[in-house]
Length: 177
Ligand code: IMP
Ligand code: MG
Image 1 (cartoon, protein in one colour):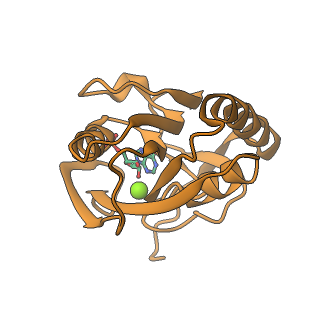
Image 2: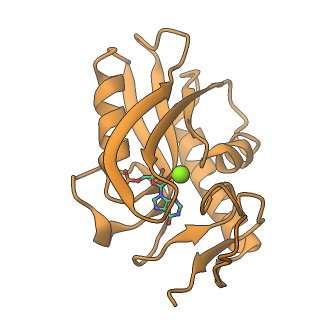
Image 3: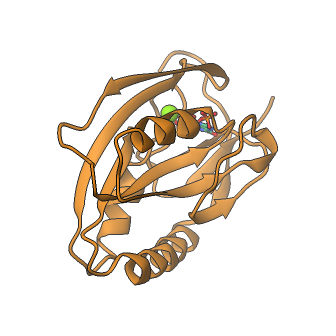
């Protein structure tokens, strides 16, 4: 991956993540029983979180994915969001739950929620594993939240730095040098 290898510091351990995911699943299960929700994962960062989340959900549900691009290759946002891959089905009258890895500036989530809201779902909510409230540029309501963390660039559990480290089982942050 080139010559720069960032130093990684443990932030959220596997067990801590597991129990947060199970707590979120309990809340979601309680709210979405008999609603056959459509969970929309935002690629690529949410794929592991979504996979673990749905295996904790014992209710009828459907899964789809949207791919957005908001970041370049580094650790700073480009501020511009583009839709790279849309869902192929209608969400009109569906109970939609967006599953996101991180809400940072909020630009990505805000853009996506506006986009989906225009398609007239029966309900639209947001589940995020990580919130970085100090970085927010636009307000975002997170209905189901795993962790709130300080302004750190994190990797692991599906989340990348320059497309690497998604395979780490826990979450670590990049130490500023
Ligand atoms: P936002 O539009 O600034 O809220 O950025 C949201 C997206 O940026 C997330 O879905 C991530 O893909 C990415 N992102 C934000 N913070 C981090 C981080 O600490 N590590 C890796 N990706 C991040
Ligand atoms: Mg990303």
